[in-house]
Image (cartoon, rainbow, N blue to C red; front, side):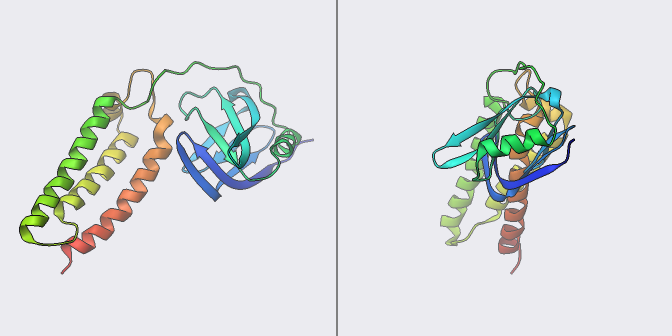
Length: 203
């Protein structure tokens, strides 16, 4: 007999951490799904193991999987008994049956892209600071707004354009590995751009 069970908590997606209650782990006989900055779904053949995971005072479970299009490190935190959670997942009928997969080494993004992005960001902020000292103003200016818009445009293009992905990603890597990070960057930069636009453009 199988059923669906779910847990509410936090998660670690790659290098990103989200606290409670922004993550949900759902388990049934056919699928295991982690929802946080996107949805990460697995069949039994795509999960190698579900193991207890501890980091300082935090307790949770780590999903060892063989999907190269997802971040390698996926951890669900809920502050409860990790072994009890694993037993409940097994009781739902989900049994890991996957074999370890191969993953391209290194970071997904090319270092040249990261360096270029940092230089463009700092260059625009420096230009705004220089303009600020000349005009005697003390609030963010047009170049700061441009830097944030560039961040939003770049993360959006990387998320959706296969051409940009070929240029920006290292060989063997796919955008799914960093998609959660891109979603976070898009949301934050969109909110910041609205706030800075109101500050810069409105009288």
